Length: 174
Image (tube, rainbow, N blue to C red):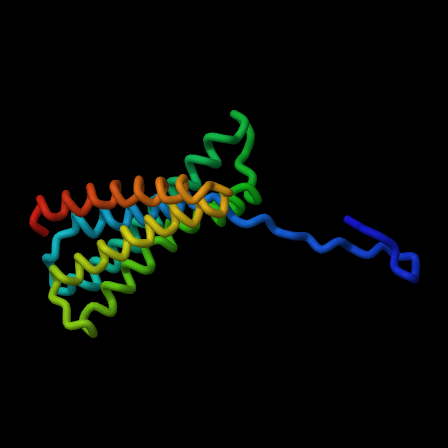
């Protein structure tokens, strides 16, 4: 891409502006997944905090890999080999599913510093997951150009989804 000629006669490249990211589906989905993991994870075992952290991260990685595979396999032409560049592109795009597990896992890691017992630790991680889910949905809507009302609606819809998981956790008594 060129815009004009420099005094030497050579073209001057245009600066590429990257559009603001508006697709936060992976982050929202990953946050909902993390909330589900926390809500259904038991607190048994010798190292329950470490186990919950690992469960969050491993689940995020497995679902990320499943999303990458499903998208790449679903979009390729039958009989054609899978394009490695496309795999890398999709893997990068879907990485936010894994990233969404990191903040809830970090909250589990710091919970002893906050003097939380295992139940308090789980509630903290669940709260973090739901809060980031609502945040990503709202930010995605705003960056996509939604009105304030629409962005608030996105946030509310995701809060309701998160509250369903909170209710499930409360009902399970974990």
